[in-house]
Image (cartoon, rainbow over all chains, first blue to last red; front, side, top):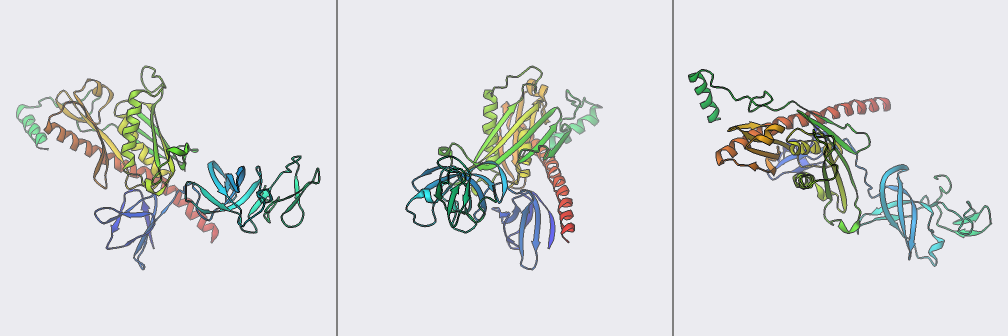
Length: 181
Length: 258
């Protein structure tokens, strides 16, 4: 594969010559042009051309794992302020919503306000990022006792006990509880 | 072109009929010295700097990011926020830092120019911020700002259909000139800033101040186009130099892996 430098608007070829893959577009004259600053790759076997951008945008994609804090719970929905993506801290605000992955009697048994959760982005429709906690590694990774604010230690499946006042609470726990944050 | 030839003939006939030399010693179709650098700021997502004669403009880009307040977002494309601002120390007399009428207008004009190039449809419900700070002003800052902003956008990794590049032409003492300076802007008869997308051959910004006849307008427009293409080459050079640095880093990583 050949590689050359590309910048926005650079002419790569005509549409009869190559298949315009990601990072390129076809203008009204039928000319394939680059959309990004990056490197142009021409695949002469598949007759395909694409541009690899050299600077990555800081936006969330479906499939990313995020770490966030639940700032509000209304109904069954939890509103999450995302603080890290793929365990790398973010420098800007992103908000998402999370909901239980199965029917529950009490939402307090899944997550509460102030919990840190590990979740996966499953969809980006309707003005918000939809997060899911339906995997063993996903769920609450840090929680505080709702009576005294003390640290909670996991005892058994989805159960936590406060280390100060021995209050027992339920959460959808991640397997990584206490190891992430 | 025909005019020039005519002038040359006259010169040879009448033995040095004074060739028009501008107030700063330039020829009518000569640009000021220019230099563009990309990626000069560490904290912004993308940035660029342009020096065009005495002009010094810094452009920075943030985004795409979640837009706030939420009721302003558009469902099908991103919002492009542009801010053209002159620093208090950019002119010989202190300028109030408050956005003036002129700055608000230029922000809007520049926004309209850049919106043609950026592929906003890829980021629905998000916004992209472009900040242009004029650190030193010496005429034709709006076209220089557009030029720097386009480089900053490309540096931020935002998809664009084409780069945007601007240049100005004008008329002083009956002569059509390229790249209007500050004194020429104040005392000249006309000023014509344009911005184009050079590969797609589209005009995205066209303003005129003063009076030009139809023929003069054509001549000035062609001259400004020529200047813009000259600046475009500098833009491409600035962008490909940062790519070169990246290439070395990438190859270094590859070697380590192997």
